[in-house]
Length: 119
Image (cartoon, rainbow, N blue to C red; front, top):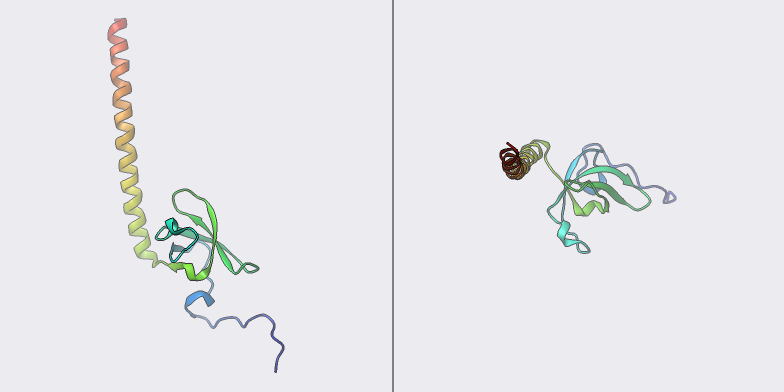
């Protein structure tokens, strides 16, 4: 029998944790016990740490890099990700714009009042 060395490379097209997810692939975290608050959150693959057997992923939103076991990642279909991410970005942008607009309006009123007082 052959000496147990590195495990054989998975055949092309293999699914599951045996097939390495490419850098930049969008994933969703699932089944996390130590940090359940991260379940359902999205991230992007940065690299695979072979010594740890975990992926390094960058969390969407706060840009933290975390290490996650392959079984706790679900690769997301690219098309679906884009539309959801775009929708979320658009919603976030709209919220941010609304928040900024409110701030600007309040500042604008104060500026107006000062200008009128000075006039």
